[in-house]
Length: 478
Figure 1 (tube, rainbow, N blue to C red):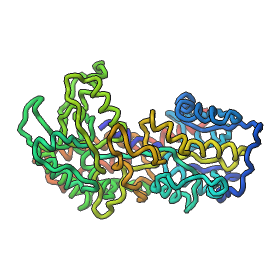
Figure 2 (figure 1 turned 90 degrees about the horizontal axis):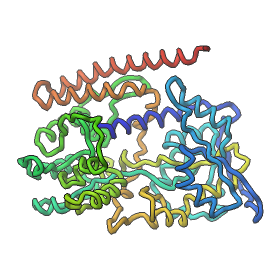
Figure 3 (figure 1 turned 30 degrees about the horizontal axis):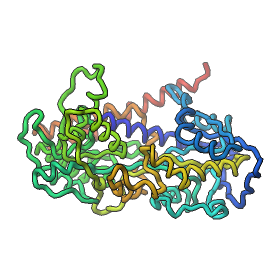
Figure 4 (figure 1 turned 120 degrees about the vertical axis):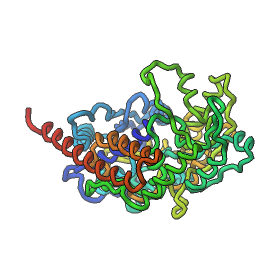
């Protein structure tokens, strides 16, 4: 549940940064590139880059770039510390950009990219890409399409990496029980039907589960299962524009019933209450909690960093048999099988339209999206590189499943910056309780959804009122 909550929080924070009302001087269409004069052989330049953290920036990008281009110095404008209780994230970001005037902007998420492009904050890269004959043919088309979609057909930035998830499966367990391997683009029903074919009668260390939604799971994951199924089918549980819950529908009822039936079958992992959650644990204990890495789960969904976790488990857990694993795509909507909400382009680098150092800024963006950079990073980084030449194989495993699906263009999360972050935790607890009541036979699916809708709406209204009151108190002069 923690990972799911973090995902929701990330959506809310990212979205909150997109609704910025920039100053009038930045309004209007984004700046067109045209021809850019190249830097002279001995010409010096300094660029400012807006990024999360100075140290991580230099480790990831800066050191390699400055070694390649010693005439271009890079300063990092960190956005750490500008957000916090009582601060408006939109105003904080605007103030930082207007005050520090970074040349390169890190755009967190496609919605922020869209807003910045619409409000004239970005420099269109299409012309300079053609001018420099920069190779974009070997950049994953789905990521370029996602960026163009938010720029009304133009490229207002490029991303050297992207995020994707896959369905991991334990080949040895499937072979042991004579079950055919998973395939790409299965539905949730397909995955759950495979999970149900594994035995459920084991005890203790002998207990095997067909599926766990994520490799690490805490208490109260019933809603996490239902939400994963629902969002795959394009459902949204809330309308942020109207500030109303939208979960009492037939479509969500089907997602709830599938969740309940699956959990009652015993094929899906349902963690028990944990004690001593604050107890200090060694890294070995942390790895042992990963049910897939310890061979207790036949299938799980996770990001590409799971590969590193599996390798670490192999190195550290000497008493655990290493997992013989492979991957296929995450479950998809059969009506929309080429797209997934788990694929995203979250780190897009664009050029500030007001930058006086456009050429130097472009040299930086061009380098971190180059074939040369991807070749170097593919040896050490766990990130999925958008330049695909060096990225579709890892330690003998084909990573194609991470690359097959496209980011979902549906705007399910548009406007989520308006939802108070304090709403999510109590709502999740409420939803978990109601789904558990259906599992226990104490309520019907209709009754549970009505309670989630009604009480959840009350929670939303209360959270909005509290949030508005806090903002009002912070805006008053001290």
